[in-house]
View (cartoon, rainbow, N blue to C red):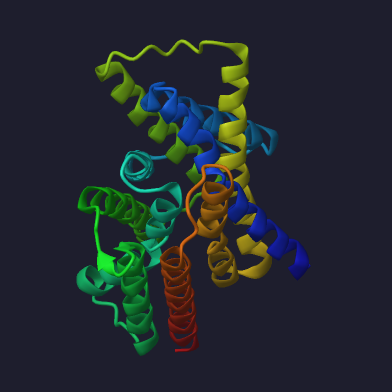
Length: 295
């Protein structure tokens, strides 16, 4: 039923948009971000692994898949690391919105490195997304760009785009659940090494903190990933990707309502242009795919 698919797509976007609720208090409490993200992805991997056991799906992978999963884990980890570093320079609403231009980066990488053609719709989406980022950087009528923050979050978006490109081009013969499990496991490994190099303690200070980590992993990672997988099955990747536009909207709403970010006209128009640009890019990709399939 289509309604079920749309509900799952919205749930996926909303759950991922909840990230600032969990990350900002941790940053303000000066708790190790690497340890926090290690537990987030470890618990997420264990939950998805539990589902694989329940469904009796094999955990076996070959060497090629092992290497690809390790690279995917690195890309996902760096995307998370740069996003949360970006919160130190940009408001959560702006950072989450800039992150969402990753479909546009995917289109650019595919154009420059894989020689895929850019349609007029794709070019329009690029220009709208770029204009949206510029407007987000405006303070009143003057352009005041926090270059450090913008650059860091753009790196986050780039690594997420690379994650998607590798998944698409690697031709993996595994289920979405197995891919998610190993990606999360390697991502957890990245943050474990980071925490060890930084000599951070892995001790969880209290039972409440332990449950906070569990809820953090379940809501923002497991629910988001699994709902997206099922949404794509029900309504297709195009509709699911368009519903993903809710992610920065939810993040901005949380930032305004909970963390007292000012909802300015620039923020409204910046978000609007980026969302329109991304949706146009998704539609352009869908048309391109239909043309290829009809040949």
